[in-house]
Length: 270
Ligand SMILES: Nc1ncnc2c1ncn2[C@@H]1O[C@H](COP(=O)(O)OP(=O)(O)O)[C@@H](O)[C@H]1O
Ligand SMILES: Cc1ncsc1CCOP(=O)(O)O
Ligand SMILES: [Mg+2]
Image 1 (cartoon, rainbow, N blue to C red):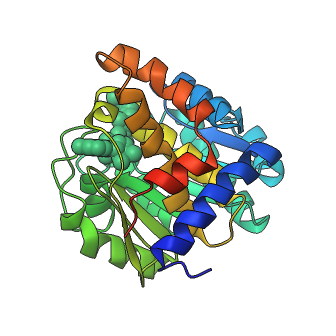
Image 2 (tube, rainbow, N blue to C red; image 1 turned 135 degrees about the vertical axis):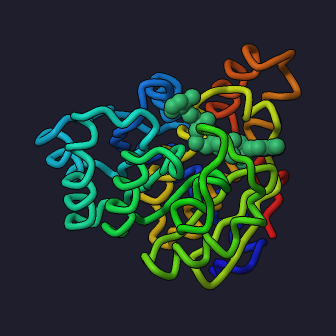
């Protein structure tokens, strides 16, 4: 498989969805108070097994047995903050892939310092919106709270810089998601604007990336596969919903229903 060949990546993404359903990876989440329940439901729907293990000592022990780990900085309370670096180190030491979501880094001092510390611990994937990726790379001041005020294309240089400095895949979300390992740059154009009207949609995508990264050693392909399955499910859900509330429910349903053939037919990667 060539990770820069859209046809190969499409095939592998479809296959990875089937592997995910067979293996049901155990995904550990240290995530925020807003997105916790939605994230767990998204993971269950897609076929993974969520565990919100986020307190010191337990979290780092769990990272050794988890299939993948998400560390998300959305509401970084003291206990979670204390657990994060040791969890990242334990994940690294035990070859558990881990995803960093630097929610709202930029102007907010506590999470911005913490995000810089964590990114130096070599996440497998850094996932954020464009403003977050620009800020983490030192290229911007942050978005509007948790929302982006920048475009993924405008964050490409920042993503390349972060990827090269830290040896991570960087996935920048937006209307077209831009994903890079510091050499290749791939774009996923699936998705629907209703995803931006459900809080935690970006956060839950990070957890899905941790699930896929546990199944595929090429983290670029894992991030593309996760984004594609997720955003195609959003397209299907949007066709059946009348607004953000019914969309959120339909989205969880479509994550549970989506199959490999649908991924092959609809995936728009280039
Ligand atoms: N305008 C848009 N059209 C289609 N999909 C979008 C749009 N904006 C974001 N998405 C999708 O929504 C999901 C969350 O992305 P985003 O809203 O950028 O993250 P965050 O919630 O962290 O700010 C991603 O899967 C992304 O592809
Ligand atoms: C609203 C909010 N405030 C702190 S974390 C959070 C959730 C952000 O979720 P997402 O980044 O997925 O939109
Ligand atoms: Mg976010």
